Every structure is written in C-alpha cells, then in structure tokens.
Length: 395
Ligand SMILES: [Zn+2]
Image (cartoon, rainbow, N blue to C red; front, side, top):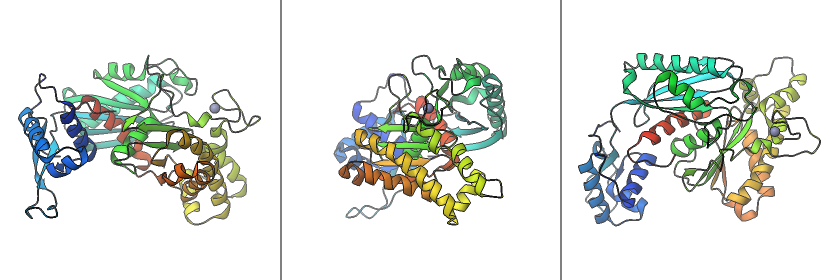
C-alpha cells in the first residue's frame, strides 16, 4: 500500500459490512472487488456500493498495482482496493530478556528502520524503558521523521500484562514488578503506548504476517528462555479475564519436579525451556553450546541434540494436545529461539497425534514460525497499526 488517502471524517461510521471489508484489507493487503465479495460472502454489487462509499470517505484507495485477471472475466487485470495509509508513523518496541529491538513503520506497517541493542532487560525496568525511548528517538532521526509524526507505539514485554491495570504483577520479571510499562514509556515519549506480552504479540504477528495468515483459530507457542502461548480465536487475540491466557509454560507436568521461577514445581517450562535443554546437553560437548549452535547441530543430524529436542517437543506437544482438545485450533505455530528446529516441531506433531482426539489432531497443522526472532517486534508494530487504524480491526 503506497498511496495516501484523505483522513476519514469522524462522523462517517462504517456499517458492519464496510468494517468486514476494511478488516479483510487490513489482514490480507490489497484485494480486487471480486475477491472481497468472495471473502466477505457478499454480492458483487453490494461490495461495489460499499467500496464506493469507502472511497468517498477516504478510508480506501484504488492502487496503481493491478491483480491477476479472473477466470471467465473480461481478461483485463482487476483494479485492487487498499486501505488508505494515513500520514505519520508507528513504532514497535520488543523488550526481550537480553535485548531491545525497535522498528519504525508507516501507518500500514511497512518497516522504515529497525535497530537492536543488547541489554540485561530483566534487571531494571525503568532503565530499560529509558533505553527503549532513546532507541525510538534514534529510529525517528534515522528515518527523517519528527517526533510529532509518531501516532502510537506497540510495546512487547516478556511477562503477562494485567488487562485491568496494565501493570506487570507477576514476579517473573523482578526488575519490572508493579510497573505499568505502557504508561512509563508513554510518558518518556509523550505518545500513546499499547503493551502486551511476547507470546500474544508473536501470535498476532504470525496470524497477520507469518505462518498462520488467514487462520482465524491458532495457538502460537514461544519456546525460548521461557515458554508461553498466544491464542487467537475467531481472528482475535484471546487474552482472558486478566491477561493471563496462554500461560502454558506453567502447566504442571511433574508433582515432584524442579522448582519453577513462578513458585510452583514441575512446571512444563522447567523441562523444555532453553536453559534446561542447554544444561542437559552441555556436559556431553567440549564446545560451549549456544542457541545458534543447537539449531545448527539439529540441522546437521547430531543424535544427542535431536533426541533432546524431540523429547522437549513431545513434552510440549503433550500439553498442546490438551489445549487443542479444548480449543480445536487450525494451527499450532512453534516460535521462539527453538521454533525453527525441525526436531522440536516433529516432537510436537508426534505428541499431538498421540494425545489429542484423532479428529482434532487431523484438523490441526503444526508449523514453525515464519518470522523468527522478529515475531515480537512485528507483533508490536501490528498492535500499534491496529489500534490507530480507522478500521478499528481486532487486535
Ligand atoms: Zn511455573
């Protein structure tokens, strides 16, 4: 989407059908009127009228780019309709346990600048948020944009954010406890900030721009230093009553297992998260094992790495099978540092086939994430785009 349209008049409230069309354009990018009619289940003439009204409002534009000719049509490539890209930009900020990544994008989510810095983010929330604000200012300078052009920021944090208070209330990120990260970063940058956790934003990113495009029901599981899941139901992120939905890492898999950072013992995370897997494998290797090295050894067919990663995938898949029985998702996307490991994905598949109801397992695809370690920053950008979009689509 490269063309800019007039901002939509505040009074022009779109109908449900018009919102369905703008929602489709937000999720899939430019589409022809015929494709819109098919996807929305509306008649061609209804879609033509709705598009006319949306063009008049400035909510959509016709693009210079053309689609492929339709079978049985006039043979001329159809004109594509796209959401207008309002002026200004948005930023996505991803705070991981050991890094901060910032991306600046136009209002359609097309990335202009992306930067990353290493930091011990867990230790000190306020100091990390100072760094985030500095990096956003630096990205604005690099893109030649003014601070006043920044419409909103999406912020990813590696801990659940309470839905009611926007506060980080769990103890798993000690230097952040009690902080309201959206407020803190918002004050530093004088802009509206929307915060969510890493698994939710990974799910949003993979469902809009990655492995699960066009899938309305999916579970994204992030397997890294911790383990968490983001759940998309009916095309919308399911955050739960207080924002704790998808905390699959703390499903209990052993009564007398290791003590977990959440205070319980025998949590799934203590068996399959990266630190545990590295600790299990390290004694058998002379070299220092890292995430990158694990991935390379898995790809090269190293038997011990394959065995340990497949077992971890199976343990994870056992918990996902139960979740699958309850939610009946179309896809499980395995993301995070180990998401791209073939053995992990194969282990997850194996356990789902074994433990989920056969019909549920048959309807469920298991795929590695497409966005790799960019999933969270893309999700943060997507959140900012959705929250500022005239369409007001789900986020
Ligand atoms: Zn736990």
